[in-house]
Length: 378
Image (cartoon, rainbow, N blue to C red; front, side):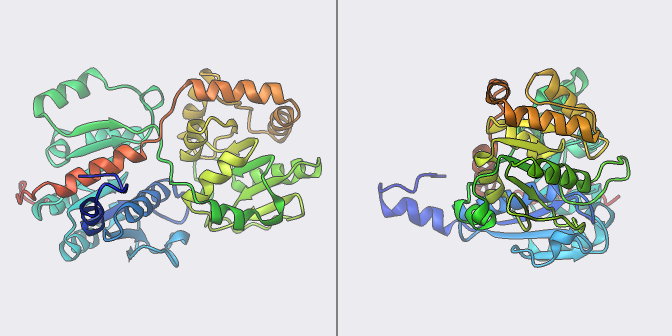
């Protein structure tokens, strides 16, 4: 599969433009949280940018706030797709994709349905429970690729048992994805920032909802942003789709809504400092070499932030107003401290996995389909 769009002949361009696989995305989705959806959206956008004729389709929880007016075709189901196996199987049969990407979602019946029509199956795990599921022998036989969505130094390296299973079955291909950065979208970022200009502080607290295992909410991040703006700094607050709280916008504090991955990348690049939770955006910011203050907003984020702090790559204050404000104001006021933190972030060398992921999807979609039935339905 050619990747270049250079002037080496119209044949290359024709091949790229005519490449038109069908790719189904099945991410975890719901009223709160959007990490899996955001990763799938960035990947789908990048696929359409490289191969305009690719057909994408999503299966999403109908109550997810980002499901409204979504710019990719989607089937809305009554709960997260993991709980809607019958509906997912129906979409697989009707859409007949060449590739199905399950992101922390799905059950055995859905994976088998994809294999039954000859689709390649990719599973993305970002938590220990999902990783364990993907390393069950029954699932390993169904998967072509297993992508662990964090660096090995954070997610945990391959264990001896996992290595033995991979050696026994010879499948699936296992990859650690440091992070996935959407291609930069400068015009959208410019339109969002308006008269504010490049922010001193960018705040990204996640999808906007509250998780059951944490008392921290995006509203806390907004209050911290307002306080820092009152000190004279320019602050941009990225309100996720589920964020419904009011915020006191001013000429130094702006609330940004409907921020897609490409615009978020530019906002990260242009900001002096990033106040973020412990989800995917933290890893994206570190891959861009940004100075970060990180506060967990869900139970699984605490250990992730702690690991990054051990590496010296982030500041991780206790989630109290005074501590968070003190860390942010210190880094904004002292350029030397901020530059030292940026150097630590660059030193861990988190890489953007998007080019590798796009290449692999292209390879899988170009391989001949192997129609096969794997066992009986569970």
